[in-house]
Image 1 (cartoon, helix red, strand yellow):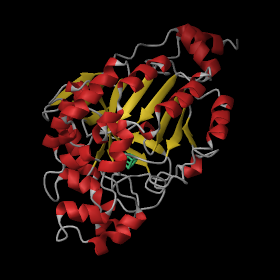
Image 2 (cartoon, rainbow, N blue to C red):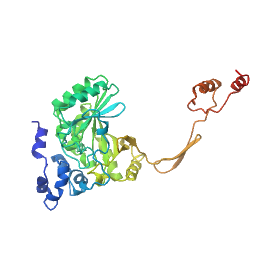
Image 3 (tube, rainbow, N blue to C red):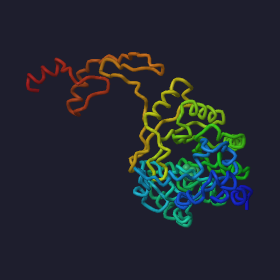
Image 4 (tube, rainbow, N blue to C red):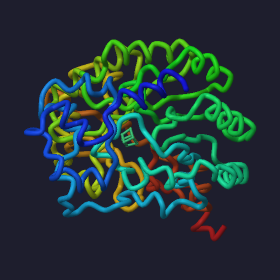
Length: 389
Ligand code: SF4
């Protein structure tokens, strides 16, 4: 057993009794929390535990079960309808040129807001012996050039199994990009071993979408793990989820983005929390997300500004949202406000009258050439029409 597997086995907290021993029975009501625990597995690694400084802080809120998980109002089990877009087990194929490949059912630490809580934590729900149909599907669908390995956390697999997956994917000529969605760098940085870093270099380009929600998660150990990945040539991005009681504050978000960049991780997405049953108490309003984006854009470098997206409920995919900068737009000018709220006007390019040749071609095709109005009818054409040509 590897050192990191030993840490998971021996040093993580995975029962309410152990949690109560750590924080006190007056804080952890084992009986009251049991239904939430039974509904979605709990495990907290030493690294994640270390980040909790007090009851109710942002780390506590992410990892400690609460009775609020049982308050289901609008939440649904599979809020993004991933299973509806699953042609074979373990694959979700929603977008034209990329596919999600669920390769691991487990995580080092379980996040209470997890969108995939219906599958995660239960080894039977993402069966590891059903990769074959997934590879077959990926081989047959030549339009797929980007595969996102996810779960659960793919980095919970052994190096041997990961290398097998990389080899299989690299044997498919049309797959250009392999991405790994993983929260391991903040939960179990020990997993980023020299052996893994050496092995992964054989299969580039490999991208890792990390997941950090709060600046305190970028501990020295996490930053060192990110550094090892960078040195191994893994391109690093971060997906952050906007969570009430965790990071729904522009200052916290700005700090998080800065800490990520210092660790050479490019902020990629800021997600609205999904409408997932069991995680509804983490949801903020969309206005809060827009307010945070407005506090980032222009006030700090563009590198530190992720795309703010809603993953459409029911499976419509990710849709980017922007604060309202545009005031009006017509053929002559565009009126907008900058990050400070000051108003500016941008003149549209002057509409150049169409040439006679263009008008004739347009009449045949019934299209308008870009940047030109389909209005002018040149005299030559009029003459021809009048002459019955
Ligand atoms: S690490 Fe990711 S998949 Fe695992 S519980 Fe957290 S959010 Fe869900």
